[in-house]
Amino acid sequence: MRIGTKKAIAILFILLFAISVTGCTSDDTASGNGDVGLNANSDNKGEEFTNSIGMGFQLIEAGTFNMGTARYAYSQPIHEVRLRNSFYIGKHEVTQAQWEAVMGSNPSQTKGDDLPVESVSWNDVQEFIDRLNEMEDTTKYRLPTEAEWEYAAKAGTTTSYSFGEIGAKEGPFLKDYAWYQANSYDRTHEVGEKLPNPWGLYDMHGNVAELMQDSWVDNYSGAKEDGSAVDKGESSLRVVRGGSYSSKENALESAYRTRVDPRDGNPNTGFRLVMDV
Image 1: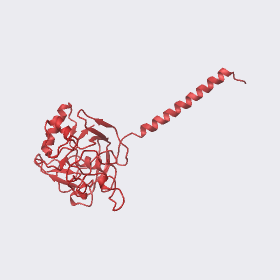
Image 2 (image 1 turned 180 degrees about the horizontal axis):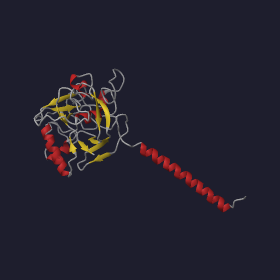
Image 3 (image 1 turned 30 degrees about the vertical axis):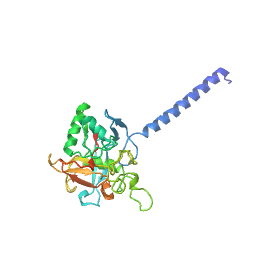
Image 4 (image 1 turned 45 degrees about the vertical axis):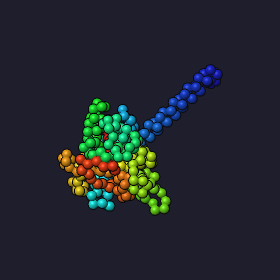
């Protein structure tokens, strides 16, 4: 049976349209799967958010990881933590310009809008958080728990640093990711100048040490499986993570931890925020 010219053209048009629709559907699906977010075994980045004063946040998907290290008594025992809730964490340490936008003053020793705010105590940071929450009509901003911070710092890795172990003659090099004692000239530097970790977070190693929500405990023998913050009262010592511009290499390791008095601020300590989803 012979098909007329007009009918053949119509059939060809229908076939071409069907093929093009199928191709678009496949591409869209693949693209969507590429941005489903983060987990402990992935380097995919989740969605981002920027607030009214220019703080950029990265979404960290809930997941499970091994917290701690055998290298330090304070960071033992290594234990499994199951973070059941996703959260946003600051891509950068809070800057002096952002602090001043909320507090109206700048206590930092080394001044600069894009330098991390420092010389702020844990108690000062709680006031900053209260004011920022009020400004943005929310209750979502807070300091990270120790477990959240380490999970985000490790970014799915199990090595001492998020980029691996330090090579003696070949990379990776700590100086490419961090400001610390060997390269900082004994001062803070603008946030985001070094390479980010695999989950897009800057200065998780060095620049300023970062305050946590948790009270200090000498080890993880009583650690909570869900990674929630330890609270031993307002006057308790608080955990600090990440090392600073004045720290030696080991203090910048993802699992290294130390402590401060909540009333004291010093030039090598600042913070980054978490925002609940």
